[in-house]
Length: 64
Image 1 (cartoon, helix red, strand yellow):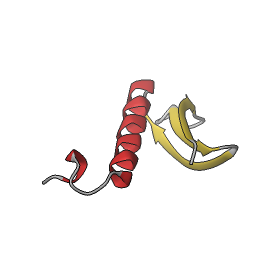
Image 2: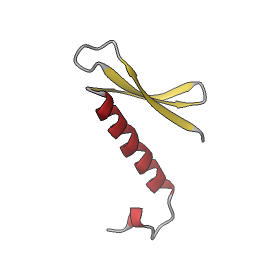
Image 3: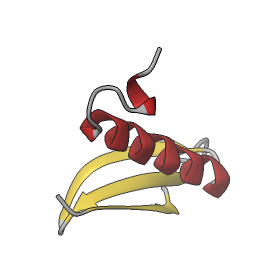
């Protein structure tokens, strides 16, 4: 699955940016965020969680 993510401007005053995850041309998730930095952190956390979910048991993602 080719998943892309970007931080884009949002129409909401309290959360002026949003993170948009896409698979090809289809939007699969959107999250409002307060800043570009917060959006970039959200992308990193989400992609990290996806990588760990796909990792085999016994890898550092599953220790603990």
